[in-house]
Image 1 (cartoon, rainbow, N blue to C red):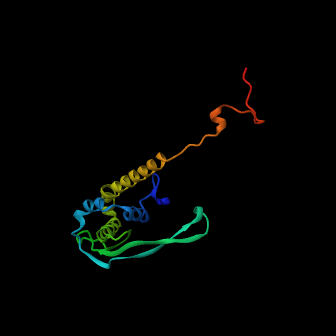
Image 2: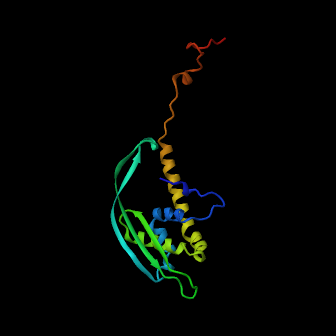
Image 3: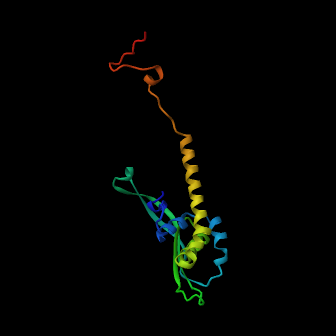
Length: 175
């Protein structure tokens, strides 16, 4: 589920692919408050939110031949955010794809993508928006790992439970 850009490592610059992956998985209850102040910016829809199906492919064992696993519901949109005339910036285009049917979630993700492309806003949005998303996703992953670990079964051989066995299959003699 997680891609190579989920763990950027120290000193690596924040790349658009990284924040778009975070925004695609961000829950709406994190996006809404973080972008509340930016919702009044003038924006024009290039592609209004629309929902459709996308084919998902898998690989047997992660390395085998590709096969069609099934279809998932995806919502996408694109918008152009006008920059402030006082700052002299150019308009930026934000796009987003999210799993599911939430038009509001994809609108907020596209707005965040457009705002993050502005270097003047990037550091502030990284702290107020992307860091909470990272924490939420890390917590969700640790909860999944804890649930999986709770079902783990350790199998012991009869030899380890009953004592030691010598190389020819018989038990060692004890004095």
